[in-house]
Image 1 (tube, rainbow, N blue to C red):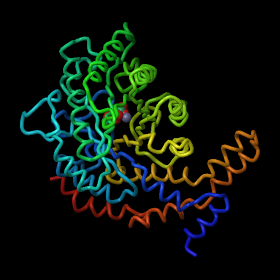
Image 2 (tube, rainbow, N blue to C red; image 1 turned 90 degrees about the vertical axis):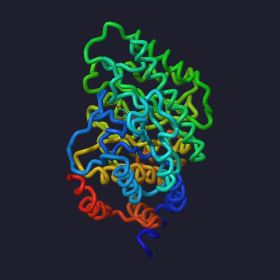
Image 3 (spheres, helix red, strand yellow; image 1 turned 90 degrees about the horizontal axis):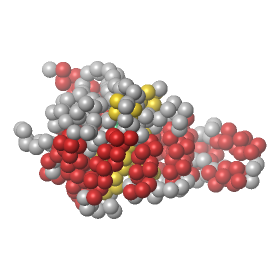
Image 4 (cartoon, rainbow, N blue to C red; image 1 turned 135 degrees about the vertical axis):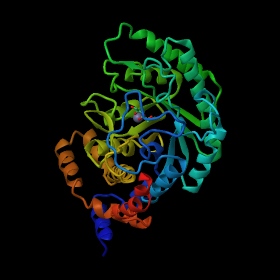
Length: 414
Ligand code: RNT
Ligand code: ZN
């Protein structure tokens, strides 16, 4: 018997079907962000990330242009198991010299990405307007700016992005999730907390008034508790966006780096599932403040995965990655994080979820505790390795990344 066959039998003794878990996992899409490859710099000349987000580290080999970024994404994809979507930011538009500002981006500016996504075998494209790293972020504000010219510019940008998102959906034959995150806020104590939020509300209304196909484009809004230089007040707070989304039939995106340290996204998912058809995620690793550390196979990630799996919310919870680490090899970071999410999903699929729920409902807490503990030492690793093996992959991937580093990344020093 192989290690997998033995593991399968062990799981079966708990009523868990390892084969079914492997099949389900294979089909769960994870949206892989393009911005891990270049420290969120983008291709439209905006420069290093601003607006309270920041990459730390200076590992050699950052992708400096479209060709390099495509090569790195392709390399990363080749080492990632499962179904991958590609998540793009508007700042990755492919423009001619001085061609258009962000309020005038068009689908044509993203046609090369569509071609690449198809070649790379992506199952879809997701999209994000980019409301940072731009001269029109005035006094740290965008959609909530009191300057009408600035506010209108960003409204136009988001409307332009709706068109592009629709184009992605049509081209890829699947929905496009379009997530709006803005950096707006204040470093110091605000004199007016309501005014900026009313302006943000008006801006969102103006954006969403634009007719778009709601089947094809799923709009989400991403809240944040604070950012660097935006410590005292964030316009797009959790309460603001949850109410806005609920009243306007759009979706909330939860980024697990965006809450107070003792708030858990794993607990927020089921709260939202009681009200929303869909919930979007940015899976990150919040280390005290949101610095978007590489996602690891840790407790909170496993809890998040459990909430997706045991609530029958695969397909309702749209999983996207959002980390940008420049302190280690960026491609390795990409793969490590994506695999961590896959592992967490697999570990949740390999639980006797119905039995555990029945024990809770029957108030049989002693048995529940014992069974939950027993599950923790089931031979998960053997099933994971089998998952990889069936896709021509192995646990070890660093060798290949090191080869790529030597042959490709180190050449970029020149
Ligand atoms: C920033 C948000 C946002 C960004 C990306 C690049 O705090 O998490 O999602 O990380 O849009
Ligand atoms: Zn995010």
